[in-house]
Structures are given as structure tokens and as C-alpha cells.
Image (cartoon, rainbow, N blue to C red):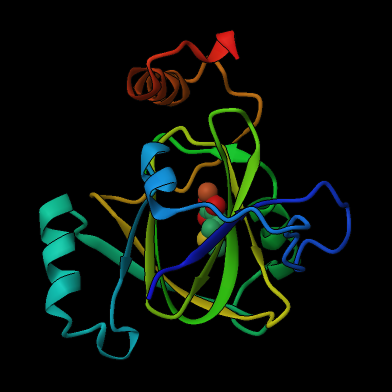
Length: 187
Ligand SMILES: CSCCC(=O)C(=O)O
Ligand SMILES: [Fe+2]
């Protein structure tokens, strides 16, 4: 089982709708990997004893972990947080999220600045590289429970676009051009 991802349409309708193009333009895991977005499917029911999760955490140094239950009763300033999550931004570090319950959309920009929508559901673990422009929204199910992982003391600072001079952004665009072999400005 793999996650679904697709290029978004241009409609300004409710962000919680799928926003697929007509006809749909799916995006493969290989395409996401070229952008530096990594994906695993794990067993969300047993996350406390999961050997696979343990291995990923050890291999990548994710010693920090917490849980984020995204519902108005459990999150202070819920509406404001959701607004910030959906404001296009980058981080200086990877963003690692493991969906334990519910579902939601991570949107990432591709190398041509198009939005790719990634639908995560229970069992999906994704890693967004430092410096990739992205945002998050709940879908119409309106609920998600996420595990957040981090190397060392977590830093959640979001730098809203534009951030072309941010070191993490520069590093990321450089890694993309190395993979693609063509300067981004040439597109
Ligand atoms: C709800 S987790 C995803 C939102 C996000 O991009 C962030 O926390 O930085
Ligand atoms: Fe983020």
C-alpha cells in the first residue's frame, strides 16, 4: 500500500477538498524521492513496539518524539495553528511526521514550483527535507493524530515564503539542481 499524491488544481475552493486536476495527474513515490521527500508505511497500531519504526529512528538519529492530536479540544489556538500550517513555509531541519490516526494533506512544491498534494493516512510516515516549501491541511475527515520526530531538541520554527536567501533553502535548491542537472532558473 502506498500513499497517493497528485498535482493540485488551481481552484480556490475549500482547502480540505482533494483539489485533483481533471483528469487526475498522479505523482509517483519516485518523483517525490527526487524532491527529497521520503515515505514509509508502518503499522500504526503498534507504534510503541514497532521494530521498523525503531530502526528508522536509530538510522536517522530521531531521538525526540511527541504526539500531536489535531482537534480543537486538545490543541491551544487550534484555528490559528491550522492557519499557520497552511501558510507556505520552510524549516531549517527535516519535517518528520508519522500518521497514527485520521488523515490529512501535505502539499509540497515541485522543482517547477507546482503544488503536489500528498494524502497521508494511518501508517504513513513522511519526511520532508529541510528547505522544501510546504504546507499542511486537514482533509474533510477533520482529524489527524501525528507523531513528530526530530534529531535532538526540536525546533519547529517556520519561515514563511519567500526564503530564497535562507541557508536551508539554498542548500535544498542546490541539491535539486545536482539531481536534475539543470539550473532551476533555466526553466
Ligand atoms: C500538522 S504537522 C504539519 C504542519 C507543518 O508543516 C509544521 O508543523 O511545520
Ligand atoms: Fe512545516
